[in-house]
Image 1 (tube, rainbow, N blue to C red):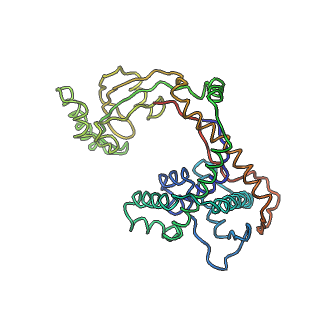
Image 2 (image 1 turned 90 degrees about the horizontal axis):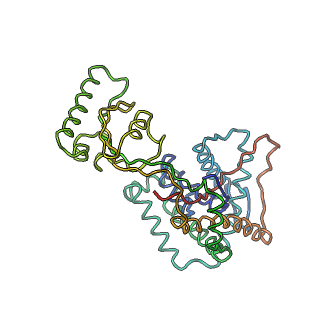
Image 3 (image 1 turned 45 degrees about the vertical axis):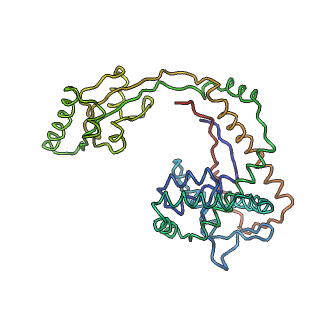
Length: 365
């Protein structure tokens, strides 16, 4: 989806998550982004103060943690922050931290009644994602965060989220006509490509393997093909012999996917096969495969009725970005905000903190 909007407070609140659970914990990061939950190490007493919002300090340690998180997020999007861009990025992130603190202070005036329940739910989810309390605590410690700090930040994140969502609910109304107008005006956003559903059996073999190893692996896949030709069900053979851990226990099922999703040899084969057809042995960089096409969906434009509710939610959140920015500006106009971080020197960079994407609903699969 090409459309992106800035949800300033949400962007700040969500991006810290990966820092506490390690850089490769994408699931934790995504979950925290959706719930506007941050994990940020609290600065030690006496830490440098980079801004003050109605008497509440924002410390250098908080800023540095946020900048690291944003830099990581930008790197995953293909942009590596250069030293020259860092000062500009710091200013941008600090502005978002200020906005977050302004909304938090407002939210603390009317704390949601069920906040403690929601905090516990998110902590329980975080524990489960790491395999239990011990692993959860260790992951936090590796990121320089205590359980108490994590809990505090989860609570703040929920209050911020609830405050913003309440604001959007009150100020943003999307009519069925609004949703229909967007749908009619953006047909390309609702195009669904041709999809194929396939299963496979894989016998892993590296391209660098010796001829002897390749011969043995080829014999294994040939034996599997013989079982299928002899009458055994494809799914049963896949469960017994396939070495793809992601699909073997599902009978080799890979679900629906479009052209270009798989490696070229695999892609070419499945899109040239008929439904229920079983291939011969296909060789890819992963080894030897047997394929079965189990379903097809032609290219189409998803009907409006299938996406109208998702589309209304999308438009509400997109408009909510504008409402959020205006709200933060409104709060700041009556607040005492002191920015103590020195302004950066003029730089050629246009680096700013990443925006939080709100994507239009994908066509139903």
